[in-house]
Image (spheres, rainbow, N blue to C red):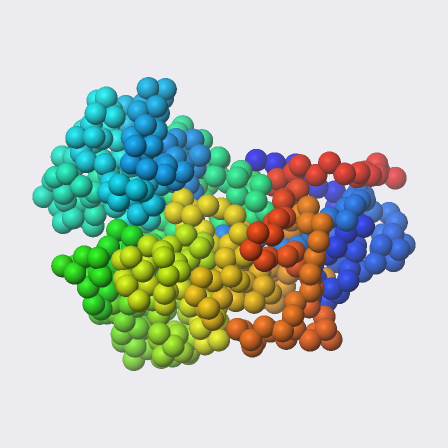
Length: 541
């Protein structure tokens, strides 16, 4: 990770600065990690002629750095250091990748991720016998792309026997999956974990991300993993959430911002564990899994609200969303709407939500941490959502509906479920695969920058923007072209009148060349740097 010291006063000139106070700014001055001025080059050179460092941007684009509001750092890092199955286009390719990794790694436990049988011509995952043959005696843990089911070799199977969701030959779901994941996680050495966390955080910084929200918990990552991650120095800021019900001081004990994140109300649509009001179209014998009822949800909200910390839940299916709505209503009767809204509780994913439910969530001050690349991967008339849900599958992830209802949006990746690629995420939010569900470019960009800070309780009107008084948290991008916003009927809360001084953004149309990150800066300190343009450093006077 890049963690070099930074001069007290820096002047950036010759660029395009994304600022709400001056959309035509070409220069920016930073003192002690705070933006102090924006404007034109000639004025900046006069005002800050004694700057410690002058950076010639040579036309580069400077914008607030991104926040990824939902990640799993170690799992995402293991995808970079271990067995990556996301590119496998068939069952045969998956088995070949497993064999190759087993023979080259020498590890006794192979941690892999990313298989998706819905994209394979065989339309099925490997059998246990096929996995054992490929494993050659090694223990395999291979999480599905949504991380709500997994394939394991026979070497790990005894950890899951007798648990709900056990299958003798197929993927493990529910508690069986949680048990075998814990066993696999225990086999990861501290050095492997540290390498994985470093790999992920370095990659996030290289994509213009200055902060990530780690959504941890006993079923997803573990206490040691969470503690090690929060103790790291350098790289993007890690905001930690711990997904477990308990007394409010549990958050303090864990060092967590709140008892939120992946506290599971249900599972995922791809694994058919998202809780539905009506059965799955392609599996009419199941409506998914509901892990928490309204009473438990309401009690958790009460405990956290009274303690002044964030509560939150993983919620995807419409059955789970209905349970969450009832839980909020229960909590409101005890703590009152004002206190409930003031706590700014979070819902992760929130994929199946009606207009009426969105309105109620907006009144309760809820933050929706959403993942637009889910829609890009599985939405549309021919996607996995429709395969699992029929016509219901075209109604998922209604971002514009949530925004119009006043729900705070924060965008993220859920890495390793989808890739860390913030500009592609913004693009996917704009070009939703269901007409009318997307956001304007400005709304999507705001949700992936300022929205992430607001989701974590930082709502000072400055953080996540570039204006005087704001933290100097920004990224420098190679973005040769910028375009101004035009009128957009999907979101009415943001003006696009030229007099509103809306700053320009890179083109986001399908097929556009998205910006490449040159430098990422967190409160004045570079955390990623491949910027090779001219800088002048002044010595002491």
